[in-house]
Image 1 (cartoon, rainbow, N blue to C red):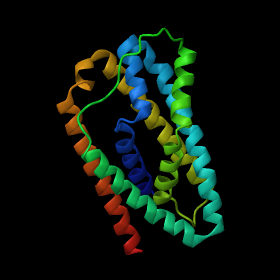
Image 2 (image 1 turned 60 degrees about the vertical axis):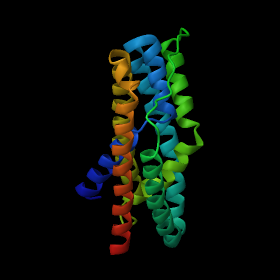
Image 3 (image 1 turned 120 degrees about the vertical axis):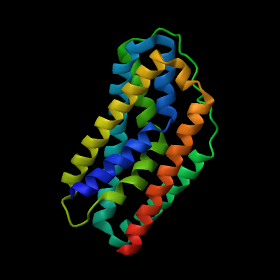
Image 4 (image 1 turned 90 degrees about the horizontal axis):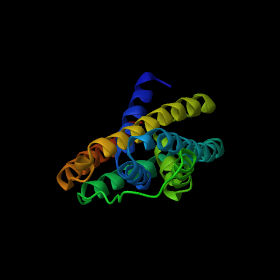
Length: 207
């Protein structure tokens, strides 16, 4: 794996992670209702959930990689199209972040478990990783080495992202409730996703 490939993966992952989804809505809901103390357990739960979903996805991708080069290449094309689809969908999304404060008392362990369940058991998570990860895998390199590097990178970013969202939601609540700010955020993220998808298509065509 080249440094450029790793850097591209890290950059794409960072963009994808900051886009609000079910996991981030849960993180924000807890932070709005119970403050900054939710940041650590929620971030740990999100990282564990992503680890679960990502590991399951990588094992499936590894089986495809060994089974058929044609299927693996097809999966890369599907993944590129999926990134473009996500970008367009995000660009056209509204400016509302529908996260209501959770006022129910919850222990750190309960919050962590809730975050893990929402992240790991969301079928879209596994589907996403199956479409996303092959864009950066090199069939000629050791698969498990790449798997460990990509997982470690994504999990560090996922933890930092969830932790940051929780702190912002608990300290600057008007930001996460501002439709204009969220609208700008969505359009920027959507544009970057479409660009990533197009760049991937261009790389595939160049090969």
